[in-house]
Image (tube, rainbow, N blue to C red):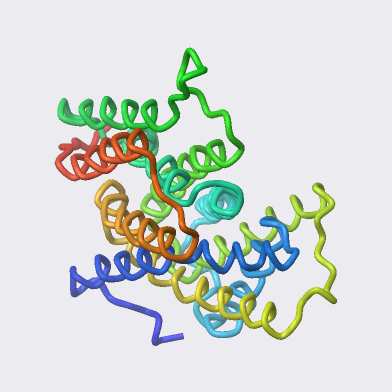
Length: 303
């Protein structure tokens, strides 16, 4: 679909796409909580919303989804890994925000710049400069502060939602780098891989956990939420993949930090959630580390 084929001529467009995506994802947790209150598990809600996004993508982007003949078949495995990592990222996000405190989960999720450092070195051959170690120190210090419990000797995740936030952030960082790495496929193809990967993985988990939804549960209001959220995910995916394809991995992570601030405001007004002083301090460390990651100097290895 020609309307979605954005060009690289305007360097501001990818940044604006990421900002819009971050804003919308900052409040995306709320409809998932509404769906959970209506009887849908996080796995089932993720599967259904991404099924809507997948169908929308096939309908509206079908002319741009075929693999080009000049794309080597040996490069197609990148789409599989993009789908798998996106699947875990999305499921972990949904389960985390349903069962935990919104901002706490997202703060742990946004340790992603820390993980991005290692994935960028491994997959993009980007070697970390000295300043990058400050990002590592601040990220780890922030995480330890957030996770610290007075009755624990070591700040280790003790809640299911904490594990979801941490693992989701790891997979998000890897997915970010993989999208940047894969320059052989179009934005539409990578988006389709994401929708399909999330749907398949969440559907399998839904079956494994025995939380398959009863279709009779889908009333008018619930159906509208599922449909609206699915279409929103479809549109956001196009914007985010465009931004992630054309913006360096660590810069993209920082731009997406806007989600934290939107989520904090939304959680306060919609869920009456507030952070403790300890979580504010740890969160500030994580945010500063993410901001510093834009100052990291990388050298691309020629090996």
